[in-house]
Image (tube, rainbow over the protein chains, first blue to last red):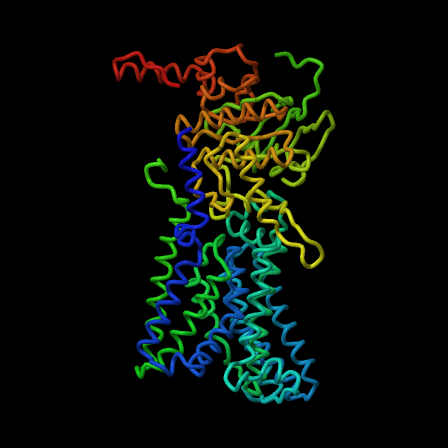
Length: 346
Length: 271
């Protein structure tokens, strides 16, 4: 076979060359993140690149990122979670009502908030796997249901739509701290969540299962993977991620509001999709999602340093999302061509 | 080739499968022997897919029994069938196009290294093993386990799936139309791999509607028509034309050919 020699040179090139970089799922996200950062550095000037400016976009990115990373796992497995916004508000409110309104110890409220997030996630997963309905519909339903429950119970118990709470010193340090007076503790939590999610995706068998379920659920089941269990745990993950941000916000703002969090639903999806995760599942990387989240944070906050009306940020994000999906499609095609040229392909 | 006195590794006894009143499989009996290729022939809708799904544990038979090494066995799930060493490879081979060769090779049976909380997926071992197993089947062009399955050619994808089955100790290998989507040269590669699997003592069930491919590698043949076994013979007992006619429903095919000849004005034979 004359293709033999050619094959081996291909593999050498793909190990060290530009080709292998281009074929990684996060390459489009890398270009996007670098491009928007350069753009706002030019348009926003020094105050965007200094510590204050960096903290500004990092804080936004961190809160979105804590939710986007577990949501990315849900999406790589081929599902979707629209309920994260309501989960955030619900757990934040639970925390504030228990530890603020009723004056229970802070840790009880925080644990209850995280358990609520896990519970909503479990319910999502249970309904999706039991009914075989699309996750889109199921999590849309829980999004409204949880929103209604939060509003109803808060009014019933507290008689208001916002509750104040003063966390104890430990929780203030862990969740509501401003490092160097600028960086939220959320940034540290984001790094921890990123490390955990990366470990699961790349270093455990569960990561392989997640890719397989998103790639072809029937074949995945045929190899003996407990598909329903894995999908339920992934929803639990995104629920806990949303609840964690709920806890962070409650400590940071010393209270909770019923209407909090809804922006996280689409913001997390935007970050994940810009990060190169395929909407239909089976493909994506945590580095990509982190870069997508950074892109989101930079655009969202960078606009304030340009002197333009902040309304334009949404337009930029919309265009970026479209561009990201198109370039990611191109790069995925390149990955599937495996560096072969067209002639060899035929 | 005589199989008298040998115990079939897998055997169907009068197996039927009924879907909502429709008999997709009707009283089929089959014996599968180690180191032999059984070709399952039949036109579209003849019940080949149903038969495969019964053999691989996706469907439970409505009536009749399945025997493994002479013992009656019930497959409740695909897992049960794969525990008995029955592996199925579908038309497009590797089913996870966006996974790497190494990762998809070990889906559901991931190798790990380290211990306790440091136990982790052994990517190096996975990639090296997958590439080595494929090279042993003659796919020498694949040298990098990080490549995506989707970047392989159709024949290479088949080979990766067959290599996986062989690596995990498959005793019965069910190949569903492995050559249908392939070009002539690639199909030949896959037929060669089938022969290699057979020589390793694996029982191969080759499902195809390509009579030439079946005659090239087959030891034993069964023809399905409308869910029933219409014929059962060993190598050399039938000619290519007899098989083709039988698959298409006998006389109907002769009529069609005559009609076609009348239209084209030449002596045509359809294979």
